[in-house]
Image 1 (cartoon, rainbow, N blue to C red):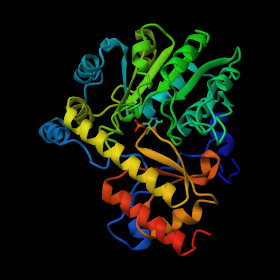
Image 2: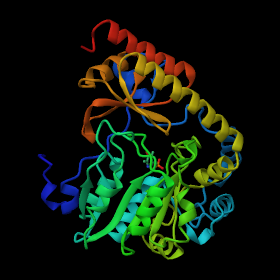
Image 3: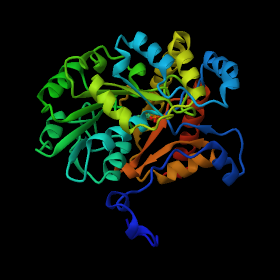
Image 4: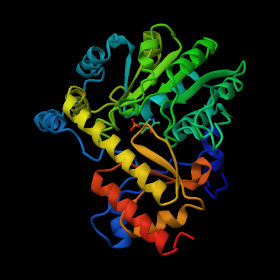
Length: 379
Ligand SMILES: *Cc1c(COP(=O)(O)O)cnc(C)c1O
């Protein structure tokens, strides 16, 4: 990284090559910079319904515990997850968001000598976690643009990147930012073919949204493949991104190793309480899923009608090819008070990633784009 940072040379080698993660633009920042109000954020795949009321009640009732350290073992949340997911609680590792678990995995299993494999266009946090520990990242070619799962993971290509030094493979199913997914048969076969000294991380951050019948539940494979780790989060369908709770399910011996590296109080007490409440709130999850599938269909239709190429998505967001450098659309939408996500950092300079919002949010986005298109501003 070209920099005039005077301490650059002192930084660990992995850190020297790193670029910080760029989050979606916060609403408050947009409104300060542009002097506008009532803007909408469709940039970080958050739940437009907000957190479940049950979680808010749990936090309100739990605030008197704030002077105390949280339960570092997360006993009650792990019990609730174990029951819900039908796994042993010894298989669960809690994280400050699933991002935390992804970093713990890299810190636990990768060194400067080892390699990790990801797909081109895979969720960027994998790359950051691998580079930070000085390991080498091997990037497998993704599916080409015209493919049924355009820009999605190509498992054969990932397989071909495995060497004797490979210790970890990250697979996002579905993947962010592409919205593409892998079917049960293909993924199961791939996992079975990976050498057992390679940890396979299947990131299911959006699994609760997926409605395809061939979409797998990788948790069912954890007992059979001891090198498989499945991560999930409360940030997406559960609507708790601000509280930071995620988890992994793995062989208990992997969980025990992660537990050595994990900060003792990595999940705060309110997050634990809210997550327990959200987990059993089937009503909120059902509403979120319904609103998403309607909104996703509306967005895919509206965007296509405007002449943009939409990559079919099974998540709560959609990747759109704007047909030219996407920056002007991004800027014009910001001025119209709609924040979306440019993905040039993924090597997709012509694309935007748009989170599915409530009906009125999606309509506002489409109306904003229509104005840009008809004014020729995007030309
Ligand atoms: C959003 C997201 C996560 C979850 O992040 P948290 O740290 O749990 O908020 C993980 N993986 C993917 C692919 C994501 O898009």
